[in-house]
Amino acid sequence: MLKRALAAMAASLTFLAPAVQAFPDKPVRIVVPFSPGGGTDILARQVAEGLATSEKWNVVVENRPGGNGAVALSSVARAPADGYQVVLALRENIVIAPLLNQGAGNFDPLKDFTSIVHIADAPMVVATGPNSGLQSMEQVMRQAREQPGRLRFGTSGQGSMSHLLLALLDKAANVPMTHVPYKGSNPALTDLVGGHVELVGGSIASAKSFIESGRITPLAVSSAQRVAALPQVPTIAELGQPGFEVVTWYGFFGPAGMPQEVVQTLNAAVNKVLQAPAMQRILAEQGMQTRIGTPGDFDKLFREDYEGLSRQMGELDMNAN
Image (tube, rainbow, N blue to C red; front, side, top):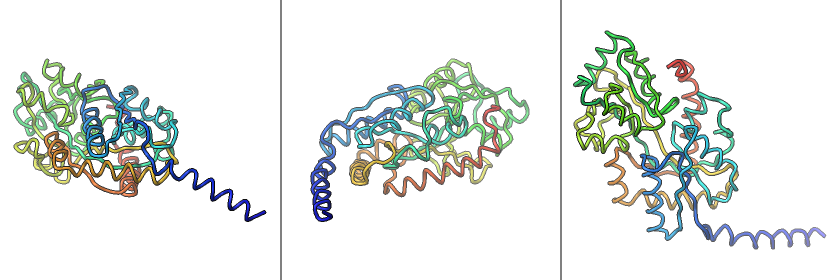
C-alpha cells in the first residue's frame, strides 16, 4: 500500500516537473504602479526589452496606476503564484506608503510577496525653477531657516520618496518648507517650470529632460556620492550634512509562495539583462546604479529597510507635512 502511494506521488511530481522547467511558456506580465512615461515605466520597458532580446521571452508591460502603487501591488498580491505576473515595486510604494497608511492597501508587504530581484538604486535630485531666484542649495537652506514655511517644495505625492527626502532634510538641516504633494513627478516638475513651487524633489530619470532643456536647474542630489548623470551637482552631504543619503530602490516582487525554481529563473534572467554594458550605460544616464544579487539578498535588504524605516519614520511625523 505504502509502495503504491509513494509510486503515485513520484509519478505526480514527474508530471509536474516539466511545467516548472518550461517557465516561461506564455507571456510574463510586468505590472507598473504608475502611468506610462515616468521613470518607473521607462525602467520596466527597458528590462522587458532586455528579456525579449537575451532570453527570447514574451514580456508584456501593464500600467496599473493608483493609490501610490497600492492598486498594482494589491492586484499582484492576489495573482496566481506562478511567476507570470510580477510587479516592479520601489521603496516608496512597498515600504514607505504602507508604513504611513497601514491598512490602506489590500496587502501586507512582509507576508504577501516573494522577493525576486533587486534591479537598481536611484538617488533624488532637488531642483529649482527659472523664476525662483534661488541659485544654490546653500541659499535654499539659508532662506528656509530665515523664513520658515515660505519655500514650497513639490513632491510626487504623500508618502513618496521625495516626501521622505523633504522630511529628512527638514529634520537633519532644520530647513522647514511647505510640502506640496502632486500625483506624480511630471505634474510637480511642470508646476516648477510654471513658478507654482520653488523647489521639487524627484528622480533623476523623471527630471532629466527638464534639466537638459534648461527649464529647471538641479541644486543637489541625495546620494552619498555624486551621480555620473549629473557630475557637476553636489550632494546634500557635501553641503554641510555629512552622512545624509536618501536613495530609492527598484525590484521585482511576485505573489507569496512562488516556486523557488521560477524565482531563480527570473532572478538569473534579469541579472543577465542588468549586466549587459548597454543596459548599465542606459541606467547610469538616468542616475541609476544596477544591482546584481540573489533573491535572498534582495529579501534581506527589503525586510531590513522596512524595519529600519518603521523606526525612523516614527520620529518624522510625515503625516503632519
